[in-house]
Amino acid sequence: MRPTKATILTMATASALVLAACGGGDTAADGDGGGADGRSLRLALNQTEEHPSFIALENFGSTLDEATDGRWSIDVYPNETLGAQAEALQLVSDGSVEMAIVSGPQLENLNEDFVVFNLPKVFDDVEHQMSVIHDPEITGDLYASLEESNSVTVLGGFTQGARSVYTTFGPVTTPDDLAGKKMRVQESDLHIAMAEALGASATPMAYGELYTGLQSGVVDAAENNEVSFHTQRHYEVAPHWSQTNHLVGLDYLIINSDVLAEMSEEDRAAFDEAWTAAHEEHTELWMTATEEAIAAAEAGGATFNEVDEAAFDAVLAPLAEEFITNESQQALFDAARAAAE
Ligand code: GCU
Image (cartoon, rainbow, N blue to C red; front, side, top):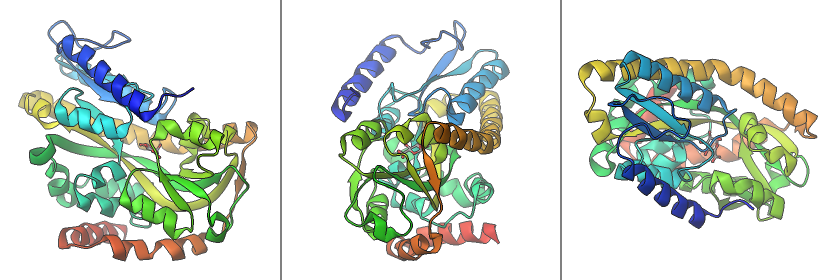
């Protein structure tokens, strides 16, 4: 049986306490990184070791370790070992874990301006998304906005690619096919509204609970990218993939702001350079990982179905107007769209 959210929280707190008791040295389960005097940054991830995010982050850690002569390194804890994303965000804010990858909707809960980059159709494709979210002119204030309130600095992110719907009960062609179905969503108001706009009943749930949720019938539908559909083995319990491409999702890399402030100027420059290389590598890996995930899920019995994309877009389009309610959100939206043109 998979652990419940409450168990995960307890596990996360326990792990954090154990890790904190070990001090700032090399605490990696795999023992690499961070020399005797080096500082090892624990990074919470909810993906498996085969996911492009894990691969790019591991390489980020090695590059950083080498570039700083072991003064800084990163230990990636995959599979929600340090907690699901909501808990990981809290642990980074507390400083008991230094870094995490969290999905856009999690940050929307701390500052509503983040909602803009979670909207359907704000990004045309991965390339457009990456150019916007790594442009400091557009994102500088947004990424620093959680420092005072939460001690969290946003460093940029990884794409989640285009997200589509998958179901336990058969393919969907238009939103009507989701009427009355229970759909798992990420924990945010926008994602709840999105499922409701599709006619489904929204069930917010942590990522790691979804396999069991689909298997047991707690939910009938979910939405994600092909890579997660495969690496989380969701295709085993919800094999009907319907290619809605309703939004291009975004994962953020976050770090505790006090930890970041401890880096010397030279080490911070090395850190930034290694991170840029890591997200560029992730984008390169993404296309291949998507193709491989489709092939593997198909071999495991999943079917990939076309939909009436326009019908999905039509019911989701009004969300932008509903969720953009202040000037800073409008400015972010306009800047993102201008970068597409
Ligand atoms: C993607 C994303 C994760 C997110 C997950 C979800 O896999 O990369 O960060 O947690 O979707 O739907 O919860």
